[in-house]
Length: 147
Image (cartoon, rainbow, N blue to C red; front, side, top):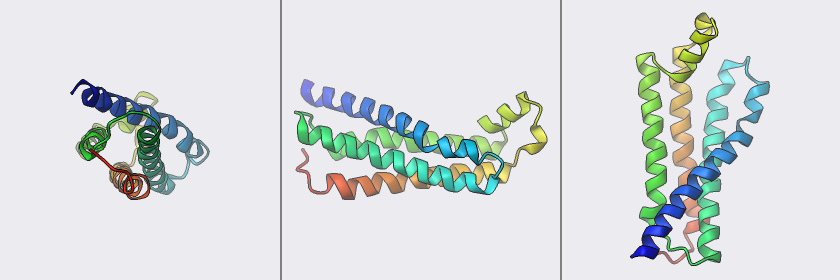
């Protein structure tokens, strides 16, 4: 029982660490494309998909090389949290209280904010997370004997 609980904690921590590390690298090209608003949703789709795919891959690798206990529930919990957070960001964008809006307002660039693009970006981010998670399950976890 303790081993299973520790495995859940390890999986959640690994998923969060990997997604943040991959996000830092995957979103780097957006720095150079910051003037192009239409590219942002596609960049978020690709980066979120890459993050989820890499996280599932690292967890599957850990499962294959350690005594980590893996189940579909253990994989689902962190991604469910990430997806629910994405829906929270989407609701905030729809209500006009998103992070990019606050950032632009604090820098005096409120007129540059595009709510439609912000909403589309959050939708693409959620779709990227789901696609990356499912792609990781099919690629890495499909062949593993889960508990």
